[in-house]
Amino acid sequence: MKRWRELGNDARANYVDQSDFESKEGVPNLKSPNIIPAHNLSLIRKEVYERLNKSNTLRLLPLDALDFDESLLELAESLENTSDIRNIYKLRKMATGTTKNAGINAEEAARLKNCFSQGRELFLAGRQGSLMVKPLNFFYALTAYAYGVIILNNPLRYRKDMLPGSHGMAYLPKTIQAQFGGNSAKGTFSDLVVAFPTHLIKTHGIEFNVDCTDSLINFFQTKFNVSLGMLLSIIPEMAEYYKLTTGKNSRCHPLEISNANDPRNLTWEFHIGDGETRPSADGVKDAFPGFLQSERHGKTVVIVPASKASTIKSCIYTDISGSLWYIDNPFYPIILPEIAAHFLITSVFSSIMRYRPDEWGSVILNDVSPSISLITRHYFSSFQRKFLVTVLRAISRYIPFASSL
Figure 1 (cartoon, rainbow, N blue to C red):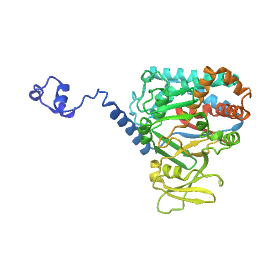
Figure 2: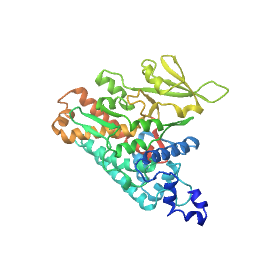
Figure 3: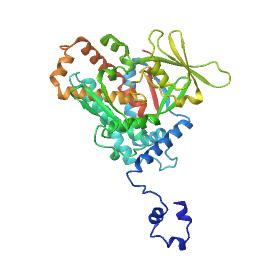
Figure 4: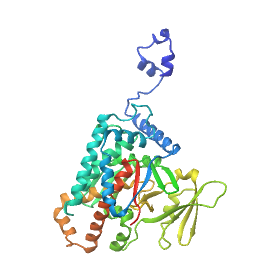
């Protein structure tokens, strides 16, 4: 384009137009479907670069546990404002320009406002309804909010009408599994995963972004069939009940990050485990490639220079109280965002509810197995409390957590 602008009128006379010039110079058609993957990867890398090299402006927000649910609801309602949504768009998408007209317009922000309002109302309906119908209400509440999460975070999407119509994952009724990734149809779920090209780890005194570019590339190259039990094993709030009902250890391990005693440069120590149960050695090796590992007081300890923290491949979730959890990742090298894990779980539960109402009724009425009934009930009670926390961490300027439980 620069060379075309620099050509004189005499030279331009040798070409029909700029497209003819580009073609004769060997430039590929930038509208060709073959170019789209490279273009998308370029947009993702640009956004990742900005996030890794700019200070994060999301604020930790402690909320008193006594009125935690009410405070979250007030925060959710406060987001339903077109002007604020436009500001948050530029806050969360750091590659967006800084001019007045950069980002989304008021009309698009109004669409997201309606998505947020619908998601909140569906959540409230699910919270007030019986367990017989909660899965469907919660799944559609999460889907409505997911549209906003995608537009506000996904480097490839900036209008709601760009979103594919499908869910972006499949429910396999014979095996009661969720299928995603690889050549699966693109949709809400795949867009939700791409909405997290980086993964922010932020606590008091610790802050860094994990580069998830390789994770996204692998997401579209690998197809997974995953059971409901496997998905429940990676949710921090389910850790104790998962072991209680299945007899197996959860894949969630407490994680503490502290400053190491290194006078030459800022270095962090990742302490994984509770002193009794540790994650798999191979999983830790994959999650922290090339970093020094050891064992101390029954915990796995990994030394990570702060300057290289973005290169770890670890899946780390944050619970309702703001504590970190290392996930023994069953989807490596894919780092699945926690909100995406809940999307899969609620989708499977809502499919069982809709297409197998007799079996669903037997589960919640404790006619099948006390363990299955217990873990199902506990998931929905914990999800009900964490729903708005998870959503607000993805669409607002805050990272809310319960200050005391």
